[in-house]
Length: 316
Ligand SMILES: [Zn+2]
Image (cartoon, rainbow, N blue to C red; front, side, top):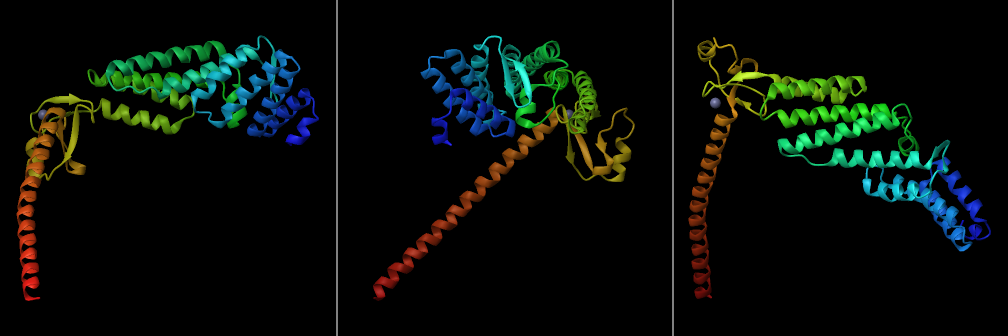
């Protein structure tokens, strides 16, 4: 391959790169493009050398389509080409359009990967995702995106990227609200559920639906009687042995204090964490006591072994 390349013109090598892309051989394509770029550069043909570099940067993304750091060199490289038409597999696309698509896809990866822990961070992430959804909708709506087709063999419309980003944004809004207002959080998850259904993502729609149920569910704390909504966040279920008399005696309130089918009682986060922390502290205390007793016994055993050894050596 390398020997043959010696006798090829850079135009022919560039063409070999395009052929390799057509076959889905991106590593080979990358080698061809880099070799073509060097040959063009030696000839002083900088525009074609840059073109070959642009292709090389694009196919480099195939090494990690979910790694945005591979996208940034491609954005620079493709932008610098000006308004030329690029050939990628069976597709032809103008360089500025492709550069914009690569930039949007890189932003999508970064936005989805950004970590949000606090309510403010979830709200900020939701804002970022919504802005990106709007850009996909405005700039790529009814176009089939080039890179997913090229690297993942998936036909993805800009509009469907926008829809899934909107759904993720609704889920982040839900997370940003759940501490203050679980009912409002459940409504955002309900919107996310509908968007996932439209996008044909039943798995994610099911995930959102389970948040709608738990965040929307309300209960009365078995211990303190507080009424609270937001299961898993503001109240939790705890295993307990309930007698029929207890169940009967607890009925009457508008909200349930226990789940009879699973022998679970509901506890608000305050009561639950107090019980949890107390039992944790008791367990640690008990462990220390055991440790002290075991250490005493260990020392006694060590002493008797040493004593035995002394006796044996005296006998010898
Ligand atoms: Zn409570």
